[in-house]
Image (tube, rainbow, N blue to C red):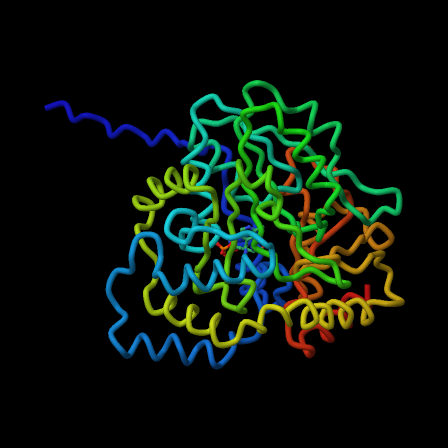
Length: 391
Ligand code: PMP
Ligand code: GLN
């Protein structure tokens, strides 16, 4: 009897390999290197917050949460948005709790991108955007950030962005505060963005997971703070960075009712709802200690300054990061190797793991730069800096 041959899987993502964060963390683990690659803190979430989650875990909050998130958490998030960004959001119609920013981004992209739509991302672009766009049948257009004359600052190339918008452009994905460069938006940038999209059908997804980690006294200007941008934007945020809790995968999507309704149609079948005790615990903590995230800029700025001062006198060139918990180091005086090769080589040879920037770009333009996560205890930062100094 003829047996039918099993049909081989035809990949929907033929060009996608394993994410750089897994690759580098795995290598750091195998080699025992200090892991300054994948972005996660080496310290614990606040004790009072852990206590609240454990309380709810032990007091019956263990079944499905509402699909849109528990009301107390949505209300606490709305309060934060009103206070910091001056926008009153409708907690029933405009705010949805999701499984970290990754799910929020994925659901938002599936909700608004149709087959054949063009989507603009800004390189270096976080690596989850393009696969989500491809799965939605969209076509990704990459617009590189511009490097300023000082060789350190990155900013949007407005002309290039405007030239890339066509009548097929359905969506632009922004990510400010920007991972990995630390670039932030100014009020003027928000106005430029409005000008760029005003006469188009283009929606916006704003990945703002580093909203609470902006330095040197600068405020975070959310896209939702701007009346005209708000009408066409889905803002995606995460508590992973804000509460030193990347493993909890708790995030949220804020968007006008019509966009939120479409977002929820996808979210309900991607994940339905998010861990119940975690939501209750975070709601309690946001209400009892709203100051925690307001102290984050100072907390992380001290880490940044410590790491940078430890690297003074080394052969690396850098400018202290403007936001996020990542420091870019320019190694052009140290090595001619490409960034991916070097990141792996230094993980093995000197025991410090980092992230190359080129993997986030369609046409690599970021040159001899690596990203180092400084969300680490002082001893780890000191040891890492000592090893980098020796190069
Ligand atoms: N976007 C950016 C820019 C990130 O750096 C990360 C990682 N924190 C995410 C999205 C994903 O966030 P989460 O861990 O909440 O899924
Ligand atoms: N956002 C984190 C970073 O940039 C990694 C998240 C992940 O590993 N998926 O390092």
